[in-house]
Length: 61
Ligand SMILES: [Zn+2]
View 1: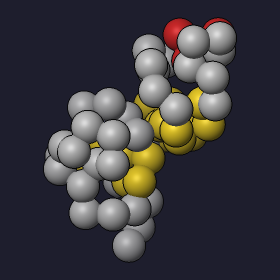
View 2 (view 1 turned 90 degrees about the vertical axis):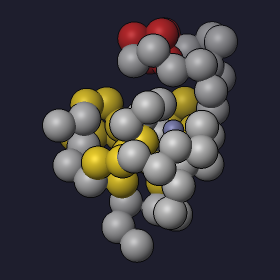
View 3 (view 1 turned 120 degrees about the horizontal axis):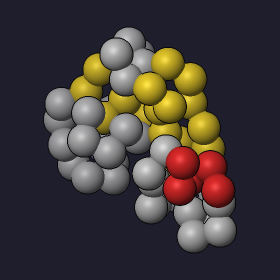
């Protein structure tokens, strides 16, 4: 399966639904991805509005 990004939380995943929020709406035309390891301490996480660990798309199209 191709990589896609969740429309809700922007998690990047390859299964049939989002492992983080269980949403099934996704886009496969996202731009860039970042890995968040420490959401509480990461400036990057704040910037992209992420509060969970994981891989996230920077921009959805
Ligand atoms: Zn999600």
